[in-house]
Length: 259
Image (cartoon, rainbow, N blue to C red):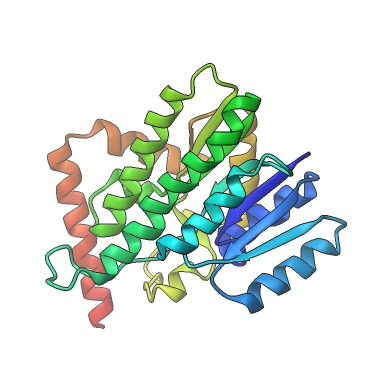
């Protein structure tokens, strides 16, 4: 079944992608910042009979990103599936004078996606086969600060890349989850108590739904009917209405954080 490379592959959605792809028969290359979680995940997957490589890399560091890109360019043991999953939540306001957090986020969730995808395509296009999955967010459909702006770029980038790749044999999909049961929100210190349980989705179910969409060569993968409906409204309501809705959500978040 070939080799899949997953960034941020030791927790949350990335770990579920690694497990699901291993179950489908893929060997893995796991990329993450910390050796301990990488080794633990590799041990888990090797127990299923899969070969697993690990690359310790911080994708905020251009040098580390280039090391991962070099692995993607290899024609020996080529990577057939690239999952650009690494990411984190943002707290800094767009108007904040200190832009360090935004710069790191752009490096990990924009620059690394661009660089790693281009590197993977160097060997995928000549073979006329391969898959790129970019983990975006339905947050990219609204206007909730830096995270929304970055995930909006991921969606537009994925759709633009799909146009460039038409007829090449290589597919690209943007996974656009909403609220997923992972440690992402806890790590980002995002309060979730006000979010109805009906809006949450299990990470394993999310990944399986995405892989079905990838098999169907869908460019955008939006899990569950609920979020498909929400995404439809975000695209068809006037942008002024969506800005007002986003503003109310932002005020609600600020109020909850102050409690």
